Amino acid sequence: MDDSLYFSEQHLAVREMVQAFARDEVAPIAARFDESQAFPWETVKRMADLGLLGIPWPEELGGAGFDLIAYVTAIHEMAKVCASHAITISAHTTLGTSPIVHFGTPAQRERYVPLLATGAVLGGFGLTEPGAGSDAGGTRTTAVRKNGHFVLNGSKRFITHAGVGEIFVVTAVTDPTQGTRGISAFILTKETCDLDAARRVGMGHDGTLPAMQGFRSGKKEDKLGWRASDTRELIFEDVEVPAENLLGAEGHGFTNFMRTLDAGRVGVAALSLGLAEGALGEALKYGAERKQFGQPIASFQGVSFALADMATEIEAGKHLMFHAAWLAQHGRPFTKEAAMAKLFCSELAMRATIKAVQIHGGYGYTKDYPVERMMRDAKVCEIGEGTSEIQRIVIARQLLKGLIG
Image (cartoon, rainbow, N blue to C red; front, side, top):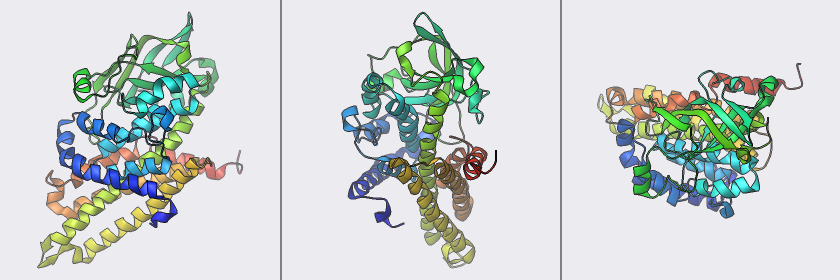
């Protein structure tokens, strides 16, 4: 892809910085943290120090003051080396912080965004429930007004940073008679589950944030991929949330989180694309070095054609992803383009990583090479932030808008 289409000198500088950090500091520890499933506090602290947890937010709110293109570039480059670190950037920024930036009051933005944008604490987004996955409108968590505050009861599933995070945007039903128009969003705070580690590295905890009684994280999920990313349940048991923590207008939670998911899909597309490109890099290197029948295996048509297909689809994915990001950055409608980018790039990540494992042969099935981890990490890209099936529904609805009733 021609860099001049989307990149300024600033974007190129961000890309080079993330490439160097990923290569020098993340790549050496990625396999170890995948194996242990421990949260990589030290490298996440380094990401915070580099400004990677607040890339698109204004400097006056503690951010780096860059734009959406720089943000997806960082995710893309990080995912070439480690998807767990890439999703930490993505979930924290798009899901944990952007709703407060976009829908919060000035007081809410001033209170919470600097803590998130600087990486002082980690954030997350509570939407999915045991009975509300693809059907996000099926939310059962409730928020009842009582004596000047809201009382929340319910739970959320598969929430990134549920344990390690301290600031969360969550959805709950405030008017059960209104369907999706009865869903609202709230800002909730709790103490990180890993207080000792947070204090050791100097990030992840802020003592000024109230630990809301009854708000806690549940068990940590034992996942196929993204194993160094913290994923848990969030539980609400008679949690008293101040009325001023209502995010956006009451009843606007569904509409606002749909807008949040559009941007999140561009981030997952970038992550998926990084995985595919990382797998291609490993396959190219192995194919050129590994010899069979007296010559490098990449010289055989069966391998070289697979490499050619991977490279071609990656170029197509780049244009889809960066085009969606460009539309979002310039305030243009991008729902369809975000869904297309997420659908294509996530399924590409699966295809590319499977081919990379195949090219590595028996070695690809071992932990001696990173392609098996990349393949495991790729699968969830077809599930999270809307399954491939949901993306096809979104795309079809956009295509048919105004044509059928």
